[in-house]
Length: 351
Image (cartoon, rainbow, N blue to C red; front, side, top):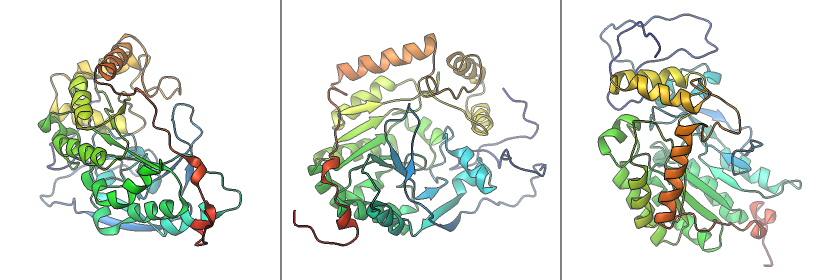
């Protein structure tokens, strides 16, 4: 464990305990409590220079992604995206969950990119880095605007979320799902409500997410469950989550193990020291066991699932539970052949 030199305390509704310095910071800062609260919410805008981000990582199953927001209000203590706030000169700690950057003009940019003569359709995931249905989406509707463009162009996509907000857009998603153009994956890390409030303080409760899975399934939307990340000695109810998700209507599932790149290592270890000090050393020892003796290993072959005996045990538990509850019996195949770039440009179609 790191030797933290300032007293820490949990902050209600927050996953991080402090404004951790980012790796590009040039000034040293010391924490000082003057008795005033400084954790007000902040929303900023940036002009979208591009919409689609290509993926060439061999351990990721999609080709392109769109993220309408930088930062995420859910405040998950384990979020691998936290270090991305460093590129903005912001803290991967509290700033990541309280300073949200929305991308202005993103739907229009997507329309232009889909309409380009050189564009070839490939799988798009919305929310691969930060949740497209985090609370600010209720006001801004950036994710809904993206789905409207994808609907017009008949372009397939999937969504990853831990928010019930996706139900708002069932009027768009369900008809597309009927044409094999849409699927949704809901993350449920644990069924333990108290643990979920500590891990994911501003996300929907586990039971609410199960209701979202049921609503999606009943509307005919292919829905899967993500039981990620698996954290040794913390969320130990993977089998129960998979069973509950299958009963709610999920037909597929996937998982990853906890990964701690860059500043996330410090943020998560602070979280451990605050919430589970007695087992923190055991947790980190098991993480290191899965990471070749290090807190994090970025090698493509192992970064998602880890390696070693402990990683093998998690893998076996996952596959046995999926087999028991009928998950992953068939792949969700979306249809790229229906894509019509002319529709994205506002042109009519004869078909």
